[in-house]
Length: 475
Image 1: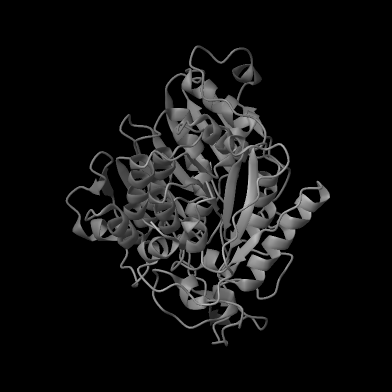
Image 2: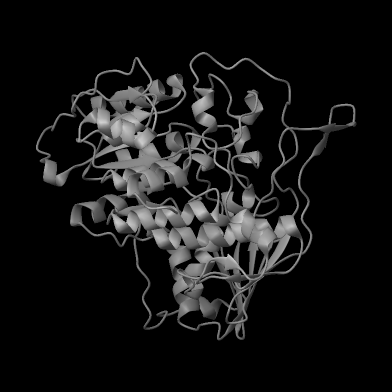
């Protein structure tokens, strides 16, 4: 297959003119190809800048060769950042900057891609990369819809690609310890799980603005509906520091708000501790969720804003064994497992992944706490959970080099934790008791709820289109 054929197959449309010629990455120093994973970075924004790119640059056996972003400035910033890092190490070589990620996926010299895009651009490049033979590191949440997540999991597993989700809490000592204690019955039977997540404010300017010259806004919208450009819908223009939380995080067109933003982390830990990694809840019930619409201006008047994700929220989910999980913005930010013998609470403590991470008011939370300190002592028991410490991204590189697909957070596990978040979001919307079949991945006797498992995709974009095009199967 030629590069032209690959681009046609990936995009179903003519590639954008003016892209630089693809230059094969150099094999540098003593790093033989068999010992180096050559990586393309898809998306260079806040999370890539502060989390994914620094972490991958620190990985042994990894080498960046290219970066892509629909914003030309950001692609250039990523290129300069990576080249500067290698220059300090005395490693020569040029990083290719492109503005269409399909260029990266089509390159034969790229083994793997790291996807650090907005939520609505997670699953499609993941599917395309898997079918193109690339290994995939994906920022959470896995997908915008449960339908997308299922297609991504199927694509990655069918193509036997090594996948890791950016659920980095699993690489932290306290989360592993808490889950291992719970899994070994330290609390007796767990009857309840309380999960606290931060919220998002209302707001966002609504005035129409001209699209910045360096930004391919039409492509950035992807499979979501076409809407006019305004900065608070996307990200701050020309903000090289990349520290502020972008507006798309607070728009339901591109995500579900904090229920997936932080929920993908905390529900993943709950699933890990309870052994629910390939399952999901049975019942979902909203207990009181408010979706942002209006905010008060400087004069105290109510103003209709742009951002529309949930603000205050409270939702309960019951799993097959009868365990109740309550997700409520009034709980401390973390996960509390409650059982017959007491409780264990686990959180990030005072640690922040990025400068703009929300911090709970009051005293800093303990990273690991319990109703009785003795619950945290001694050997956890015979059940030993997968243990990885330190740089989360190194787990991905190590498994690629070993030819092993079963990482710390494999794709089906990632899909199921994201699904639980999205089920909670559907419950918030419908505000009635819903019954879910985690085997069939369908609601029981509820056509309205089942219609919310997928969204219409704006042509020519979409995970479903990509999957069908590259697999030859109807989804």
